[in-house]
Amino acid sequence: MKYFSLKMLTAVLALGATLVGCKKEELDDLYELREEPGFAGLGLPRVPLAARYAPGETVPLFVTFSETDKLRDVTVFQVINRADSVQTGVYPATGSTFNADGKLQALSVPYVVPNATNGVPVRVDVTLNFQDGSKRMRRFTYNVARAITLKFGATPATYRNGLAATAQSEGDIIGYSLILNETGIGVVPTPPMLPTAAAPLFKAVDSLTTFYRLGTGNPVRAGVIRNPSNGAANTRTVDVTIPRNANGQNITYSFVAYGAVQAVTVTAPSIAVGPATALATLRTGRISGGASATPDSLAFNFRTGLIEPAANPPAAKDLVVNSASGTVTLSAANNTRYYKATPAQVANGFFTTPTVNTAATTLYLNNSALTAELGPVAAGDVYAVRVRGAEVMLLRILSVRPSTAGSSARVRFEYRSL
Image (tube, rainbow, N blue to C red):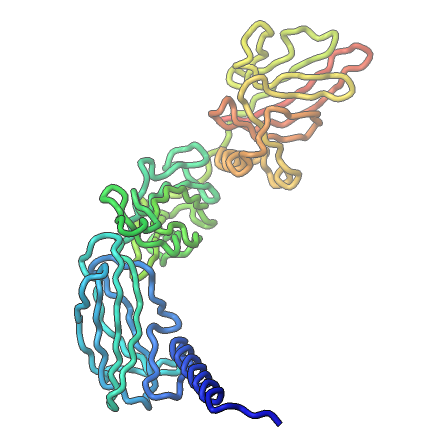
């Protein structure tokens, strides 16, 4: 049999009491003591508190408690940048309502962000006073920041098909330039440093949402970008696609930046959506290569519609024969670029019902795949063409005759332009 001394027993009892006390305090901090009188919490499940607010904004501050605890009132104090604590108000519990999400009573507590220096921390202490004389204190902190800003860039809209605003059709793409939180920073400087007037702390943007409206119809959400700014300045371009069934109507795009208790909207001028612009001019051409071909037959100029002499500089040679034996390969000697249409695009009338809108949009969407090298060509191949970084055309190969036994190779083609 083992014996414990009185001194050891006292130490064990003291340790047990300490552990019980620590556990109770830990649970209380985690708000787990739901059955103990005086339980309290801040915020609602779908109304979270944010890390930054702007001066003058009303914070959605809610206190939650059990109705059986018989809350009397709530006292709110704030401490700005470690200054003295100041009481902002006392609010009776009579205005509370039952919150189904949290299964508790919820009291909305009015709290307005003070007109304090940009970037300073603010601590808010909320004390719940119960009818039995007990109290519970809960707190949250935030930094004072500027309200979210949103505006268009110097060139608000870029029409990806290269046409004017009056020539846009359904399926066309427009890039809108937007500036979020201009000049702002997203990280608070290390104390005691504060943001400067030239680079202030801004609130974070939780989402940037695009809407469009056809005529006088209801706005339609077209897309959303999550967390586009942590407060720092962000210049970005948002591409929008004119929807189907928009022809004959005005379309208006707007952009909304959402943050804590704030939404900022900018709206672009309306665009009259009309029929697509046809590539109505059809021309034909041919080029030759091989041992018996003349040097002046190797290159073609799309702008003039003529063979480009060998002595001329490469800048005007949009289509050139590279090799002619076995297969005929073509390329551009200048900065003209090609995109080969897929069989599905060809079957859907990419060349037979051509529009500059469709061709230019295809070139934009496949910009990374544009090339100066057409490679081996065959009859029926169709290409969208960006001629020397400017106008849009469509090219279709009509026939190909490779060089055999020293004969000349020939390629016949047709192309469409404005």
